Image 1 (cartoon, protein in one colour):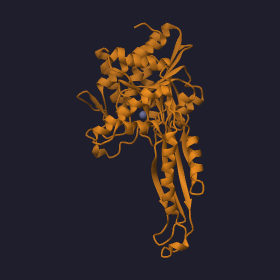
Image 2 (tube, rainbow, N blue to C red):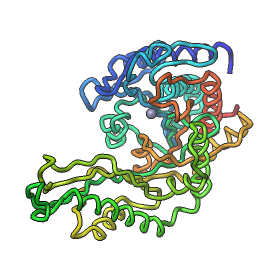
Image 3 (cartoon, helix red, strand yellow):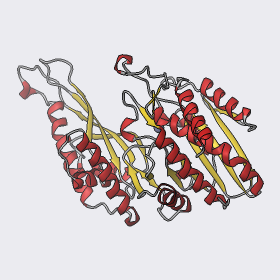
Image 4 (tube, rainbow, N blue to C red):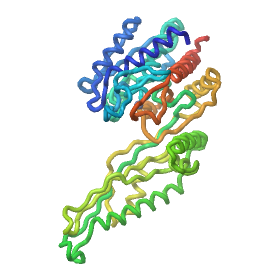
Length: 414
Ligand SMILES: [Zn+2]
């Protein structure tokens, strides 16, 4: 990468950080305006697509016909939290010793800057090539579910293509091919109220809930024994376990590789919120638990819910709060293979495909049948953290790999 391009990429990342796009509320008018102007100054027309007030998405496209490749990044960031815990103010975009600091540096203004650069660099070549379309999309609301962002754009037929790269932070030698699904439920128990001094006259909903939680955990353990993961994901699950293990070791936790293989490859179990009772001297007649479970590829949330319902029948009611299907793109897909190859050839690094435990906007693209790889600068551990930063090295490395992969995708000679 030339020195000019590199300076441009650093400045662009810093500038994007300096435009706060905190979610909530997640307004993107300012940052979307900046991106439209930036593209416009370079000769590229873009359009706003707005599905929620003041949350425009920016779309630009070059070329014509198939194949169609989508580049995507979200513009919103999570709140900065306590300003005093930042060494540099969270929207300074301060550049210090090869790092660019600020809220969103890793998640994902760095990635957004990379796809903006890559789009403008390759657009003239794709136009000249005459076959194939490259779509750039900067989208809203990822941090709160992506409904007026990627979900709406996919539904509307704006983001439809043969492959997609989502530039969320994977780090330059890893890429994400899949993510776990969501299965959030509420367990509800009911009892009979009585005076707290005579508990034998009542039926205690909290005691029933405690038993239900223990039983639910057993049921999930039992369910997990029967899970068969797609065999083409074995390597990715092992890699993910290694990555999570490294992060856990770095923070001093004594866990093993098999602990993480289990948490990535099975249904996880986290009772998150418990409520019940109204007064210490009353036997409670109501209690509830909000339970967060993440399901691996190959398992559907509805299977987990059915298993819980039948095992808890007569003990607790199971109400569904939120679900989403786990999803992945086969390692054999072209878009996955060329990112993999780019990491090997351009960086000389060992590529590591990963399954993540959380969700990205990639799920909406995959649900539409679009092979999608998540690849971009930054480190997952820094996303949403204080003193979030992205390294210049990572920006440059992911930029170079993406340039290589997109050229290969369209058959443009280097
Ligand atoms: Zn993100």
